[in-house]
Image 1 (cartoon, rainbow, N blue to C red):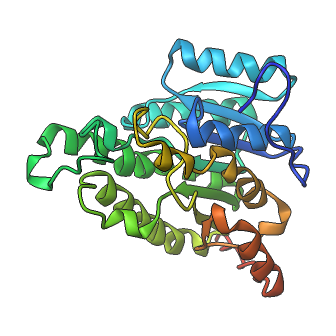
Image 2: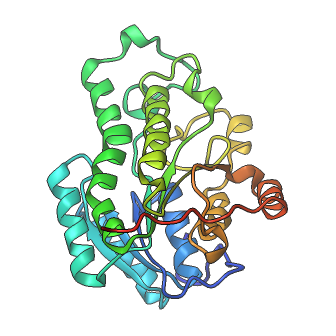
Length: 279
């Protein structure tokens, strides 16, 4: 994350000219990805609810001479997503990368989920609905609002943040597990719906629990010692915004295994899919 003195991430590529929107970018994985993109010279709209935290986060980046801009957005509401997309069209005239990251974790339904897993029948319906709305429906609503910008350009990239498959099936992980499983199914369909238009959809996940606000502060020290830093997302998100990722769609990238994934990708590169011509 950006501090007053230095950045935690140095990009191996330049993303000058890239315009990106990152949801939930005031903290955690979203802030780490936004910081990586900004440090690589991308222009990034920090999309989050209109709160003092949004303004404070953008101000910190701007004071570091990085091209961060505030984009008020409540991902749970279609009108808010549509207004944000229109605002980006007005400001920038287009968009290159949309990162769907905003979400809430198990703490919202069970603050002790690490040590005391809660069976699904004890989960409050309101808590279940809130997590599904924030972690699954929001990916649909935000992508639905921004994709018309990509269709207008005949190009664009979407990155949906997800989690380990094992965690989706883990005891005590309702509703967080189902919300991310649903987001992966949604991403697979989005990939096929957009493939012929030259618009890429890829998945990115840390590869383990991360040291963000989604983990209780009082977990066992050994568990906390094994947490991944949120900056693990930096290199893969910059790659997915770079020219090298042109034509890549339908990929599922585990940030923890980034170097191995990249080596395999470079050994077996993909051919860009032709965009659908307008009649």
